[in-house]
Image 1 (tube, rainbow, N blue to C red):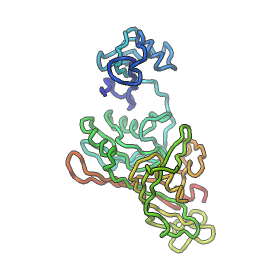
Image 2 (image 1 turned 30 degrees about the horizontal axis):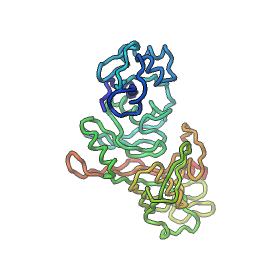
Image 3 (image 1 turned 90 degrees about the vertical axis):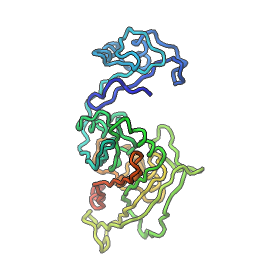
Image 4 (image 1 turned 90 degrees about the horizontal axis):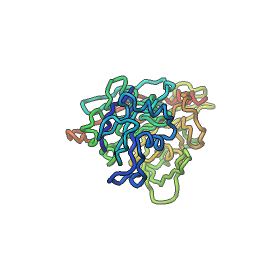
Length: 337
């Protein structure tokens, strides 16, 4: 895949299009080749106006790797990649900051806050960890090398150098990274810690258009290790946890260590819900509340707390730990407890 000839603008990468035709196999290889770049943009960017397309090519802002800047009247290069910067409107700021955990020549490890997307996605383009860090640190080559849900806080690893990026990405793709999460969940009355299974293996599937992922019969494709590490007794009114019991109206909140062996979407949230222990603050499980993405009042109590792997460049063991913490009493109070 050729690299974009356009650097990120305001931390936002250029959009890539592939022209129809050409000799290589791709989605539009068999489609008719438009007569001009303008005709191609009208088809591939259907919401663009003639004025908007003219603005795209101004000052060399539409480029190919093969021929450099393109003009609207230029003939289309069959199968070529074209890059341009889409207009990106302002976005409401997510009012939480990113913490720096560690960095070296190749990697930047950060603590991503709740509610901040990791990478540009849908409505969150400016307000995501990658864009913010590219701008704040003036590092246009920063790329996140794994996923971390917008509503989950904790460790996110970014690559600083394209030359070494692939080797670190393969660690995550090949499941050679040990990931540890912490989560809070209300314990049902009479909960017996010995009844908690040490792992859960099920099949997860997601229906298009449905936010929830569901467990279904069939060969397991999701595997999570689960351990209860602490019980916090929170009195009525969300006061500080005590060791003497909850008292009338109080609640027992379990703190769990979760290790995903696989990396399915919503895997930890679905597995905890299936055990009757939905994670505190989850707006989708057990019921999808269609959450407002700008309601920051009740964060999901799920934290990516540790990462460990063998560095593919040095062979050394590396381990990173979050500087963030879960607070049972505060979480319960935020939910109106």
